[in-house]
Length: 97
Image (cartoon, rainbow, N blue to C red):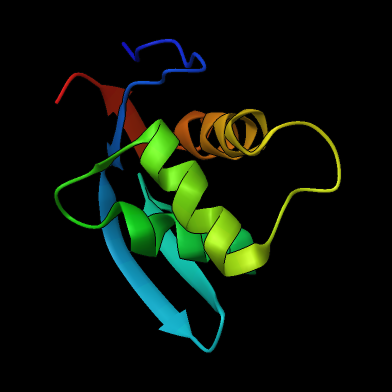
């Protein structure tokens, strides 16, 4: 079970990645027998989260420094949406520290 994403946000960590291969600004992950190709944004999210995880607000701040402001919505809302997609695919997980 995952923790709901809110503005204050949970702790975000890598999910059950079996393998992760990075080439340039994109990557591919092996998760549960599936290979997923990640966009530049998703690749940076996985890199920033690292092995120990990161709070949602800290992740939003780091993404803003890397990519600039999102085209619509707040940085935290945009980050939460990207995290939701990656959690759904098993690339990330959320919860308490």
